[in-house]
Image (cartoon, rainbow, N blue to C red; front, side):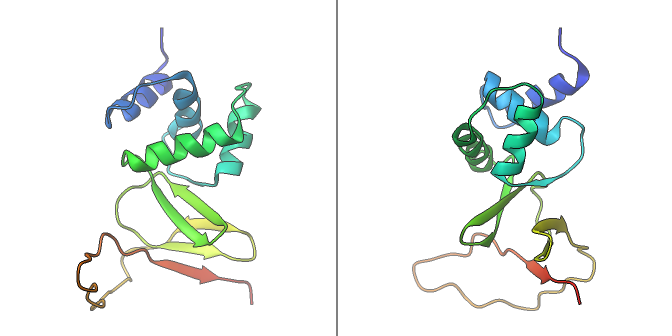
Length: 138
């Protein structure tokens, strides 16, 4: 018998035809089990998953997050060449990156105005525009 959180997690995985393996379920439960959107790094999620008794390696967490991203269940926000966050909101929206805290949060969408972007070079097309507004304490 599954509780409602587990059922939501299974249904979330099935939206993208991913098989609900034990590892995927554990990672998905840590991501969306409470129904709240979040921004996580693989390392922070690794800590959360293992805190609840699941013995999953960091490599498995990375691979699972990449699988979820490739399936369209998450978006990846790269804040520097060595750090990515995974966002459970998949709609287009801007982010604040708090440099002093190493924290990524959603930014309000209502004030963002884009009046134009450069054309893609020949032979390429724009797949997405990411907006990350970097903040630091005064």
